[in-house]
Each structure stands twice: as structure tokens, then as C-alpha cells.
Image (cartoon, rainbow, N blue to C red; front, side, top):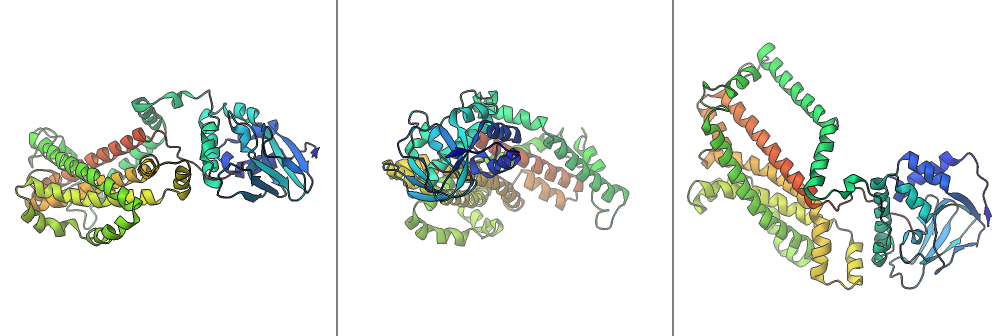
Length: 448
């Protein structure tokens, strides 16, 4: 074994490190610092790079050649032996806290060259950008459970002690920090620009150019004038109590239907994804009923439920229920099998796996489904209120059409869109609040 001479290839080594899975999120400045703190070591064919049980202080990135990597006894690994190629990382035992000894034997299968990085030096460099550094450490932890099924070592992976202020925030404070960060980004200004362009196009098409098929529509000037009028010509504006009554009635109906769909849809989706036998019984019926449009259920809803409220709430529930249950089921099915194997290897019961693996693992899909569910709820609400409702934004839009109050139609549509946007944003905020543990960019790779 001999130390390779330092050459002008640092840029190539930085690029190689950038391609290795744990370091893909690291900035170029940090990558250059890691390369600068490393040393290049060459091995001849047959050289043992390290033995099982040796003290572990260095991490290896293979630059050229091939290395045989064999895990030792007690690793509980699905893949005991692997052949590593250029760009792959191994020797992650140097990142363990209280067991810094080798769990594997690594042997050069041919002449090879490695980038050797001291584990403590790597941690000090990553602490310069704690948020990125903890993503790197999370990737190493994920690598351990996925590739080698040794989850007992995950708790031993170092976390960075000097966290940034953003990582010390929890709960509502973290949510508010994300909101303030969004407000400081270009996104809200681009959003406002998009709305301005849309309204400008509407104004030009209707009030200036008076294009065919558009000239009979109310323009933004007349709609805004009616909306802000204390004495509206068509009876609906920001100053009329009936306007707020319609909003309240629609919000109440959506909230009840959405909550019922959430309470029933999430458990059903979890069970459909978790139990194959249950899915075989229930899913065909679920898939047969799901494509039926909400309007097709209106006559049955009126027959089944008395009063004016319950049929509307039922139709809102029905549309939301399918979206919630289906996305929850897909979330369970998306969980990698290695997490189940790892849990059962550690002696977890089926209930513990369901509670600690299935439910958290499906949560990103669940909240995606809830956002879709909220949008579908408003869509179905308008259809239901047009047919069987009394009061509400859908009723306002339909009644304004029959009485030829076109500006009021636009007011109802704009209000519906604004309220729907706010409710969907609240679902997203709730998801961020409940999934603070989630690292959004976990990649899989590396070796021990």
C-alpha cells in the first residue's frame, strides 16, 4: 500500500464525490473541503483494506478499481457480500458513535485507488452547514437499513451537535419559520404576477377587444365594482350579510364531509394497503363504485337522507372518501419491504410495525390525498348545492345563472376558489406540522 501523490485532479475527485449517493446534496464548497481533508491511497490486487473488528476511523470512497465487501457475523444482513465500483462509499462504521469498529472485511479485487476521509474531520466539515450535514447522515442511516438490513446500528450514526436555528425550531414555530421563508422567496411575487396577468388578459378579452364569445361576459371592472359596492345592483357584495352566510354554509358542509371522509378513509386505506386478504374482498367493490360521478348519486342521496343538509354532506363525503382512501392505500404499498423485514428482525409485533412503520411511512401520501380530497370536496359541494342545496356558494352560482346575475356568478366562483385555496393551504400546513421528522430527500446507497 502506498499513498498516492497529490495531483491537480481535485476537481475530478469533487465531481466523483458529488455523484456518490450520500453526498449528492452537499454544496461544492463543502465537497472541496472534504476532498482537501482527504488523502488518496492505492491498493494492490489482493490487499486487505480493513478487517472485521478493526477500529474504524476512516471512510472510503472508491475512485478506481473494484473492492469486495463482506459483512461479518452478527450483521443480520440480507446481502452479505457485495462488489463495489468507482464512486461507491464504504467504511461507514467510522460514523458510528459507540461502536467504531469494522463490521465487514474489504479486499481489493484489482489494483484500486480510494479517497480516505477521516470520520471526525468529515463531521467537522459537515457542521458548517448543519441542515445539509444531517441529510447526509440520514442517508447513511437509510443505507444501513436498506442495503444491509442492520437497523440496530442506525441509532449509532452521528447527528450533528451544532444545529442551525431552523433545526431547533419545533411545532408552530417551525411552521411559521417556513411560512416567513416562503414570503421572503420569489414565489409569492411570482404568484401575484400570475394573477395580474390572468386578470389583465380577462380585461383585454372582455372590455377592450370584446372578443367573440367573451363580449357578453362581465369584465373585471364591473365584477369588482359590484363586489365592493355597499348597495350592489344584483344583491351580493362584501357588505351584504347573505354573502357571508353562503360562505359559512359551504365551509361547514365541506368541513363535515371532509372530516368524515378523513376519519373513515384513512383507516380503510391503511387496512387495504396492509392486508392483502382484506384488499381482495373490498377493493373490487371500491373500484367499481369510485368512477360513479357525484351527480349520479344525487337522486339516491335525496331518497336516503331527509332534510336539505344531509344529502349535500353525503355527496361531499363520498367524493372525498375515495381520494383519501386510495392515496392512503398507495402510501402503504409504497413503503419499502426492507423496513418491514428490519422491524420483524428486531422482534416487533404486527401491531408495532403497523403503528411505527406503516402509519408514518404512509403519511406523505395521506396528506397528498387529503389535499386532493379537499379540492374534490369543493367540486362535489358545488354540484350538490346546485341540485339540492339551499344557501351556499354553489347555490349562489346556480341561482345567479337562472336570474341572469352574471357578475354575481363571477363573485361566487372567485370566492369559491379563494376559500378552496385557503383550506388546501391549511391541509398542507397541517402536513408540515405533523411531518417535521420527514427528511424530504433521502437517497439510498453506500456501504459499510
